[in-house]
Amino acid sequence: RKHNFDPGQEKSISMLDKRSLILVQGPPGTGKSFTGVKMAQVLAQFRGEVLDEQLRSSYTMLAALDDQVAEAKREAAAERDKLTSLEQRKEDLKRRKETMKGAKMQRTPMFDQVSKELDELRERHKVQRDITQKAERKKDRLMKQRGKRQTEMETSEKSGTREFGPIVVITFKNHSLDEFLLDILTWLQQRDSESGCISTLEGIVRIGSRSKCPQLNDYNL
Image (cartoon, rainbow, N blue to C red):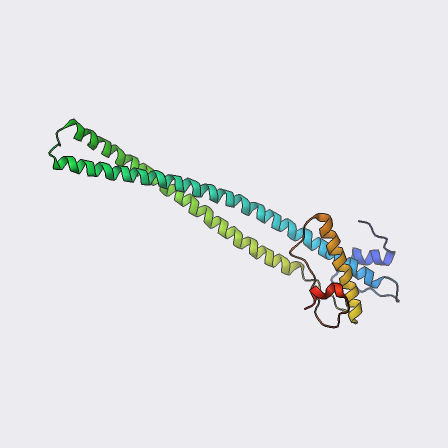
């Protein structure tokens, strides 16, 4: 959005990314407060865009890991079910074989068939156990990666917020602070309305009493 800045105002705002200190002076009515508000808006806009992009990228990666973890959990659960089924079948055959031994049926074709099936089942159980352990390790690895990424994202968010803020506004008179913050609040509300979302990383906190602006009541500390 374009604004009609005079040369001095335009120069001051253009120096935001070049100077650590900018002094704006002039007689009453020359737009010093207006320039200060626009400077704060530019800084807030830049900070919001940078942080939003960082968080958007982090949340995208986190969502992808969530999908991978969910799929790994399903795979591990399915393999555990297969292993449990084989273990139950193996125990059934062992009991059946012992029963046949007690009945002196070791030399019967039925006993040979049960013994053969039990041996095959033991081999299948070993294979399935290895598959299940591999699926569990994959699940644990992805869960660990997800937890690490979550920690990194939270650390990045905190460091990014410290790096870009807060923007501190100090004025000589209370009404000047009210007017300044009211302009910023109006801009934030308009921006959020146009974008269709509300940033959780930005807001206003007014420190001190004697505010006579009802619109700032919810922001007084």
